[in-house]
Image (tube, rainbow, N blue to C red; front, side, top):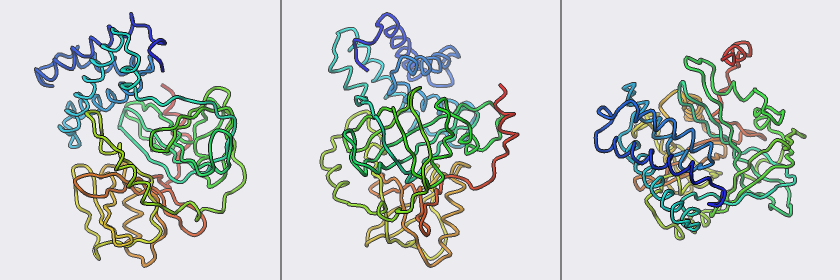
Length: 373
């Protein structure tokens, strides 16, 4: 998105009111801040997303989640996370307002941090793994980690792409997040088809590449998504070159907006073992940690101790009791001088097993009933 595309008369009041609301919370505290201030943050999230200020909108979403946890006295509330994202939202809102007022396109684009989207005529992909996010009574979302299978004018074979889908949740909803993957998108396909171990053919989409070689796939009304034949050559994708992660670290320059996961890498471990004989996960904030060793390097497998991480925990615990360790695919980042890995997939036999996706059957009738708002 370009600065010239914005309506400054609509954007500036939004940014100014958001800045004032955040300052009231920071000065008065959550308990003393007015209900109107809390409401302003919620409305600002929706408006920022509608105006395509996506980085600001995503930041406000997390801040609102933490405020909700504080209000509910939720054990998962994190003071550190709330402080960081409120501060990040304040910097973004002040910075964007300054850029708009001064017609500073360079500052605006740097703060938006949005890669330029390009048309993608067609591609074939497979799914290596899926991340799942579930916020009770709010939303559930999935990020599908894809690999391209063909060399095309736009993308090379083996290009990493991420496609995301998000579903709002009705208060009191009891349908598991996986159930929503069976709902048709406006492109007339069901996201679950990305989990069937098949080649997926995509036409008339858009993609944007980031600074570190990854990319994001987006779909429009004309996008077509269809499942082709079952894919069988999975082992070739379960290989990892640590030099790429090293180069990423050497090029990285920290800034005030950075998160731990900004240095995230897709990781494949062909050979690995649990570091401890007994199953005793450690606890770090809201995460459970299980140490493993691969090629004489220590990693910490990390999964949520909330219902979101139940399927991962179950799979790892069963695997701990076995002798064989299938190749593992996950996402690695750095925290507290440790290599943290979010496990996503095991290559069992000739096909992947997506650890984050529960294998429980979905009640289709209950799913349809839940959609009747």
